[in-house]
Length: 305
Image (cartoon, rainbow, N blue to C red; front, side, top):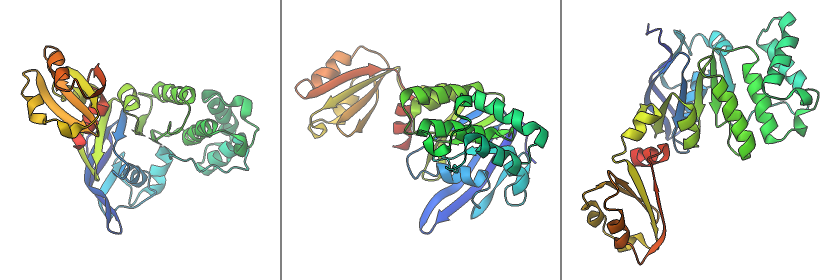
């Protein structure tokens, strides 16, 4: 038994595909009503973790408890509690949008006298009422994502799991989907897997950083960003980073940390006092200079490194 504050508890979860270890003793607790972001590189284990939580995969060892039910023994009940939107929604392309939602409503056991109202409600919610009687194969990727979200919501689940919901979408459509997800905060427990750090930063109550099948850091976006030493990030892109000794840069009093990503020097500073002097070190080789406050991307690069 675990605290009622948590609706999902992942305990010592392991999963391998042949010689590839996707999850390595993964542990994670998710609070009721929170929006938890999971970020990580390709192959970090994000999709594997959420597919096990959604009862699509079985782990090699370990347990996932959803509302105190085990995904190994209570799959039917757990599936009724979860709405899952994969990165590529598997929609039946010959169906009309309304017919697709009706099919899944019946599949999930939505009361027959509620189905029509529920479909109309969701089509309006995702701004698709005007395309209700069009076939799925006529929809753009953005419209398919909207229908995918409506399908995930059709049975009014307690938990929503979104895997890269804005991947490959145009900026306007991605913005609309982010705002829709934001509107569900507090009403549903939401797990959001994303590669977009600004998306996780703006939407999530907490963010878990996944690397090689393990959670290597977790907290609110503000907490994670506070762990990057310094208040300012100086980014210097140079022609050839091999020409420079990192130790010389670290000798400046204001420098807290130095990272190199390709030909980009990412320098964390606790004040602006040495910026001009640091730039002078690179003065004959600089392609670009930029200063900014720490972001989740900086946290991710620093933590995974």
